[in-house]
Length: 64
Image (tube, rainbow, N blue to C red; front, side):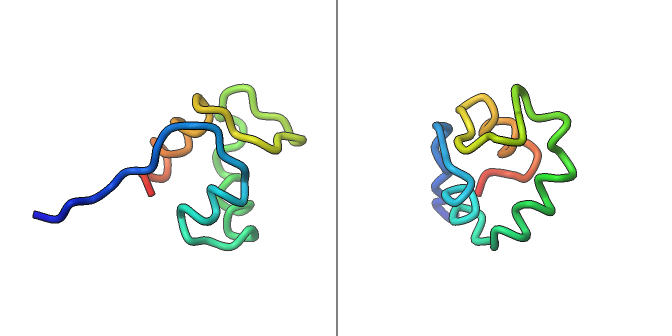
């Protein structure tokens, strides 16, 4: 059985989320565009994603 470590639910920057998923910023924006209206308390000037938003993203995209 493989021992998979799950990412911690905490505040992340967009860059940190890109690194967790091993995706480019362009891919991140494309993926984000599909769920942006459902992310709790999200605004276009969001720099940090709070734990509630991170949990939502992980639930949608799977834990990296």
